[in-house]
Length: 305
Ligand SMILES: [Zn+2]
Ligand SMILES: [Zn+2]
Image (tube, rainbow, N blue to C red):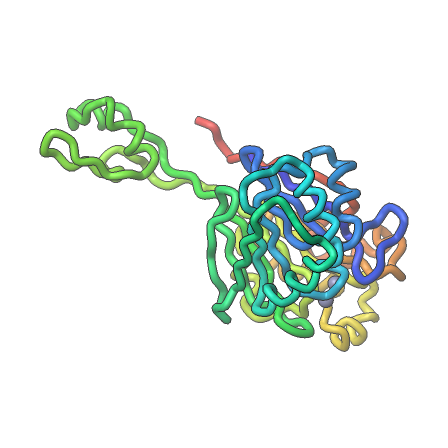
């Protein structure tokens, strides 16, 4: 079970009831944020999921609307009795940006671990029990989109386990994907595990022109959260100039990537009623929702058997 909450869906400037960009994912009580624009900690407080279990924050890039909420958030996490380290992940240059922001958030009681994503063609790291992949996107400066995946092993075949005389005490570790040597016999997961089942995937891309290959990167996502800075199709030139995406472009990526559901986010402050332009996206990808602050969804595996 994976909970997703859009903490802020504004771009550039916060509005009343629309904080700046941030997303929260919660798996087994562990929380991963992507971006922390102005207002993130207020939205977190309203959401009520707490701060102590935030284990990592990934950044798409370093424009203020994506990172200016970090110093206050760090102080709040520091006051939450968290004792474990906090990981900050982002494009090259993250260390310098964070060190600058730490000047106004000094003497934190938690260890900050900084991970700069160096590989140009994407990189995968384990965060909060999920496999998180980064993808280079096309904006001003270095920018990344992220996909978070939860894999799901196949079913354990008890009958095969019995037929092969595999000791019951080994079953649990085999189920976890471990190979075991026991009483001079080697037991491997493939002896008793069925075919891998569909897991869960959430993808997030904001502040980018549609980069080539983004549809493949987000392919089969259960939820794709993508920027739509403008709703109007005739604002495409402006979006190209500022290296952003409009609703119809985000919908085209969602359709091409065969995702299940699309949430639009990162609205221009001039776009005060994004719902008016929803059809520009749904004409291309029908299952599109207009994001709003603290919109949440719980994703579950397709079958529990
Ligand atoms: Zn932005
Ligand atoms: Zn930006």
